Image 1 (cartoon, rainbow, N blue to C red):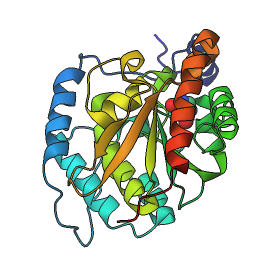
Image 2 (spheres, rainbow, N blue to C red):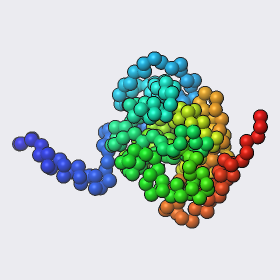
Image 3 (cartoon, protein in one colour):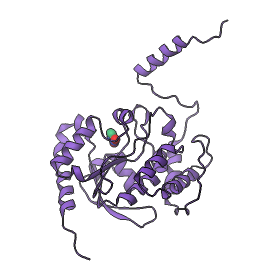
Length: 272
Ligand code: URA
């Protein structure tokens, strides 16, 4: 039997799978993501280790201790003095499995580095993966229109809970969010926003460490606290614009959230 592989046959098969929406291959054995997620949440509660001089980057797969990956992310993030350094550290980080599941590049942020409002979405999609900036597709355009109508667009920094596109636009796992969280937290430290807008259930649940769905969380103020307890910020969960594109009736609720947001952002700060 001739075992030589015809490259054209392989290309044709891959194109067939890509057309069918299959964008990544998985291991043969099932992975217990819930157990991994619980381990990650435990690791996130552990105190930040002191910054190390030259952090060692190891491959994402086959890591026996996922907590070590979070510790590595914390050390790398802590060593970043500004946003360009943070973006470079994220791009070089090999600890998030999403990086090797078909994403073209790291998608980090857009917007002014001293913005008083930080929008935190779920994960980059196909347009963001292609262009290298968050919320630039249809959902992002709707988000921008809403922020503009609320008078806050030019004061907004935009990022996500994870920095690589999950295959097939699936929801990022708690494990993936946990290994990216130290970088996100460092972005919050550097930008020093007054308010966080948590867009969609995957963002709100991860940032607030709550289990309720977005329809129950949205439109209420919560307090976000950094893992070292040093930063506390008001955080408002709201509906994801991709959901609003599918269910335009829900736009009224999202608009109520935008008004709450702009009112608080424009509220004069009380003298200390
Ligand atoms: N959806 C998100 O949550 N984030 C993006 O950047 C794009 C779409």
